[in-house]
Image (cartoon, rainbow, N blue to C red; front, side, top):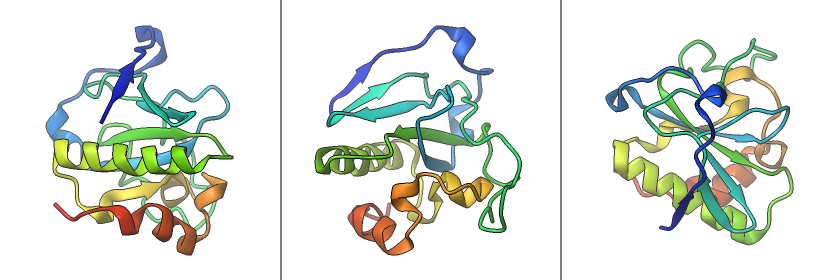
Length: 145
């Protein structure tokens, strides 16, 4: 898949990390100045942070018991994908394709493709707080590696 690189200045991302430590893909809404590794916008994927650097994407307190992976999935072991709250069908397709690309690159299993909500409990992304919609839009499109 085509991923356009628009790498942010280093002040917007964290320390270097080993690519072998990546075991989660976290999808979240782009808001409050959070910089994720990848952004989906207008049917395109953009890389903002190099994979071998940490983002602040899953940092924060646990807001609700839905955050069952809080303290397990963290900035050291995940790749983050930022999406808009209102996505087109093209955005949803590109997101699923990008997830598959990253899954194959780092041999990540389907159970480790998660939402910000699964980490902090925050309703994020709101579009996919509904487990049925998350499964239909994303999980059903993923091939197990």
